[in-house]
Image: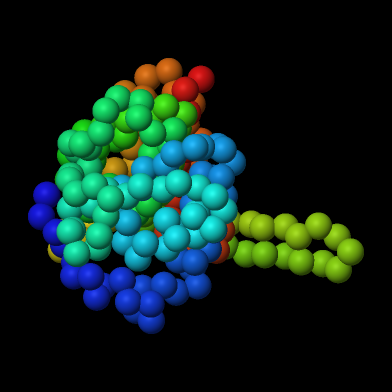
Length: 208
């Protein structure tokens, strides 16, 4: 796979909006819950996850094809240059859609090979929903995610970055989940959308 964007793509004012910050919170929350001693992040982007994780005592190594981002390892996600079960957790946030679907499945297989405890990823979900929050004083806050009643899957057109997205035509959530089960036999898969940023859908994959 060739590099798609320049380092300037990750400039704070252009890239790190409040919705993306919410997703970073979930990245940290999911990985910290696993209490790993070692973490591999594929596609380091801004480097924010590694920096924030380090503040909480996590040892995060990074893998990327872009040398100027200064990853710990240079290489492709579908051929990770690490030995089997050499990292507790392997994660990739908004990365796998940047490669054709069949290549992304190979990358998932590599993540499963390298991870001892779990694989944590997020992917774009194109299904339109309306997140709502109802907060009443002295009562519990309720968060609702309402589906758009007129949503219909559309064809995905390669935009120079994304080759596919969940809930585009041909990439239903059921199909993506089925493909993941094929790559991760015997694993439990938990998935959810970030309430503050429903375009990002998380998956936590762990051996049963």
